[in-house]
Amino acid sequence: MLKTFNRVKIVDVIFALIAGRIIGFLADDFLMEWGVNTGIYWDLVIWIAFPLFSLFCLWMAFLIGDHPSRRASDGQGKFLFVFQAAKFFLVGAVATVLDLKIFEFLVWFFSIYILAKVISFIIATFLKYWGNKYWAFLKHEKENIHKEIIRFFLITFIGLIIDVAVFYYLTRIMEPQFALSYVIWTKLSVIFAGVAAALWNFLGYKFLVFKK
Image (cartoon, rainbow, N blue to C red; front, side, top):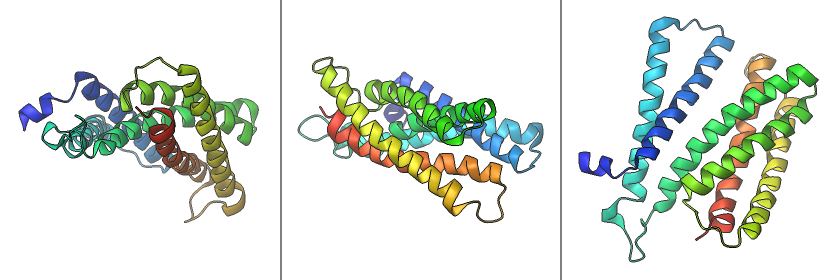
């Protein structure tokens, strides 16, 4: 088990811990919005548990997707997409927190929800590009990079349409559900919209943009 864990690169470990902490920060943010006073004890649990759980999930994805014992004849894991999806999720989680915080700031500054959502999505997408290209899909080649960028922005633009459409539907047409406040429902809508776009983006990035 320890030998297997050692094969996970140090950058994977570091990024998983950082991503887990950021996800924990988002969870703590939601608890505060719900009026839950976690206290020092639970804050400490969140600080420790989320990073470790994030690292554990990445390690399990490695075992399933890219463990040497499951290597195919081409040298890649038979279920490599599982490991890629785990790293894609972590990149997306970090980008989602960035998306949410920038969105909240722009709404406070401009008071225009849709404009704020478009801007926050675009900024978060730049983080997703570098994280997915160099970490999730390990695509370091620079040949035909202009075509890669064009495909990336095309896939991302469609993802933007999906993201904004889902966000608009949830906040303007469906409106808050389950007796949730509008503030909490808006936060959830940002996340749900991001998940919908992320599913599209993962398939597009893997098979069209960063395909080796």
